[in-house]
Length: 176
Image 1 (tube, one colour):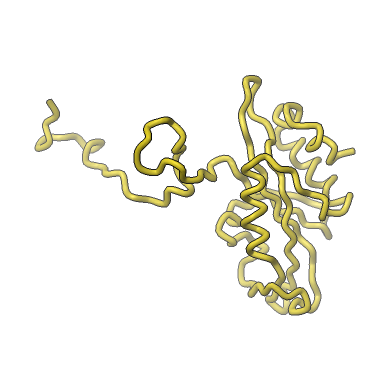
Image 2 (image 1 turned 135 degrees about the vertical axis):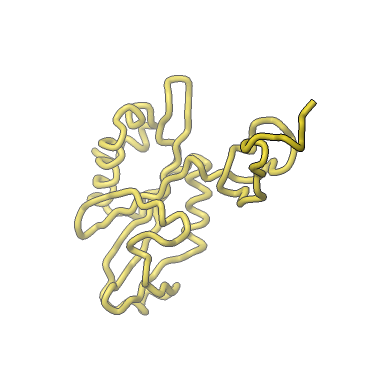
């Protein structure tokens, strides 16, 4: 029987309500609280800077707080951004199969930013919907030009070549 009056520190720590959408895997079969909630544990935001031809992971983008997005007032109107610089926010979802993890879903969302004017364009509904599609294994990168897709593909390949090799041919075609 558990001694509630003389418990150790591990027993004293309570698990808080937390934000079930981003923590833990609710698919472990327990059937209790949190079943059916989404998990973003396997989604990673990658920023592609078209002008610099570089790609990098920026976890701040999970909450619209990437380095590119900070101190920028975004509107859904492109004409509100006077001198736009094009960025792509790419939602990359990882999945696992018997051989190991692989790139599963890949969806790109446009962002235009004018740092000096502190204005930018992005479509928040598109960002949310594309994240959802990435989690479902969709590959949507046709809006990106060939150079941006190549930068993204090379980044993913260099980041983890084994995951790259286990990925679909559709994703591998990014570097061709």
